[in-house]
Image (cartoon, rainbow, N blue to C red):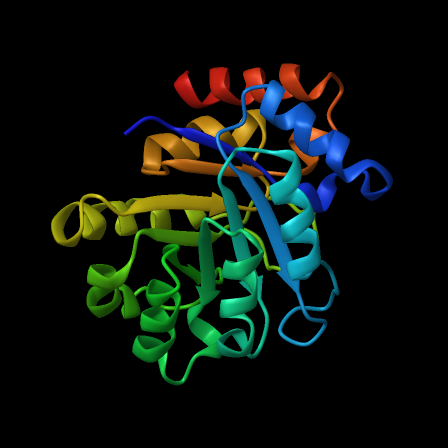
Length: 220
């Protein structure tokens, strides 16, 4: 599988969100990552379906929607209707996870499951057959610009081995602290998709330059 870069618009300039998304597409991004936070599951409040719909109008790239919210079942349909191409929910908030994953599947979008840094990986043993994507958080969710958590590489490698055994077509996405120093090790451990916010939109160069640097780091 080719490694993909998914800029997170959480780190973009919200005064020109359309411009940031267009710059990411023109700069070679593969997906647009949209972090949805409710101020309860994580200590921050961000975007809703209206932002997803606005993003859908300005890009043809897949919209990778990450629901960091306590009641995802109440909003899955709205995000799918707004134009999400994939919806990722958190294992930690779902007492009826099978039902939730089925709900996402029934909307017709790609199904993702996210796990926080210390969430046991055991759930994947049974959940992987239902997934198109596993998202491993390599920081504690809620804010951009955090440092990659030590120990995440071993978790990525463990998920890669399990994925290869149970569902080879499922992609492994990593989110948190991804930049030039961590992209290569994350890919070497097994990551297929790199979510990067500050490294893309807050970097020292243009969006195209920072995406190219991430690709080079991932390859090398």
